[in-house]
Image (cartoon, chains in turn green, purple):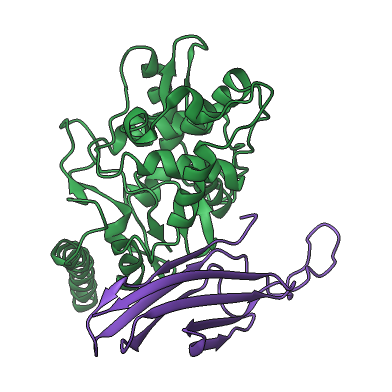
Length: 287
Length: 109
């Protein structure tokens, strides 16, 4: 009897040691791994404040395999650039009743749009709500150009968001989190930590408690949003952050919110605030 | 993406005898013809790029027959020994008969 209890205790101890040992080794190998994504100088940052839940903030790049990383090291091999190039063409494409294009008002995107993608979602004083990049573009289209809205996941919208975010590549994510944005951050945080669905899981159960560990054949990331819109190999195309949210929610067997809903906008704001300081990688390549 | 657009990265200049690397990428859905429309239950017709050819001064230097298992936005990388100046021509042939092509010049010194 005594012996069995002892063995059991020993086993438990061993299991504990092994578990922590594997995770430490994993993080070390990850840090030691060579190379960086194209146009990026660091993929890990220290959080700006001490009260955050994470000690180190990792870009999703960290957790991907060598083959996937190689695609993001070279801008030519990165298939996301097909969308970026299309976005560049759309920038000067005239549309709508006013015969205007983005260029008519904003002129040279390299000047007018530099850094814009890094600060989204941004508070809109007129509408008294924050707007994501997608919503901002559609506001421009309906009000400024009197053109039809683009659908959230349409190739035009993906191209334009990828193009604009790409102009901020290498710049740190810097979303406004105080003032009128505060209730939205709180709302996003609430969603992040609320367990939902048949599997009764919250975002934090995977992306905070277990990042770096396996989920099926893949490593869990910290769920950072700095690479979106992202070329995902599984999707075989570019996809928005809200599409990713929906996929996660389906996986935990809950009913996803709609793309562009206030819930997802709040979550996007909270994530941007959570990953503050990480460099924009759009278009990132992920599996 | 609505329309397929090719991207080519080939060197503009090379010394004689150099091995030059050529990279190509094209946006294409590569619909396999094996999937069904979830609402109607009908098979979505196959639409893939079935042939890729690279020519130099009209002579074929590299070609591939593609099959439905190849993923969207196919990427090819190959190399050639640079002997003389000339023009590359890259040709992608679609199932629906469309042909996409792109040209690029190489100067050998």
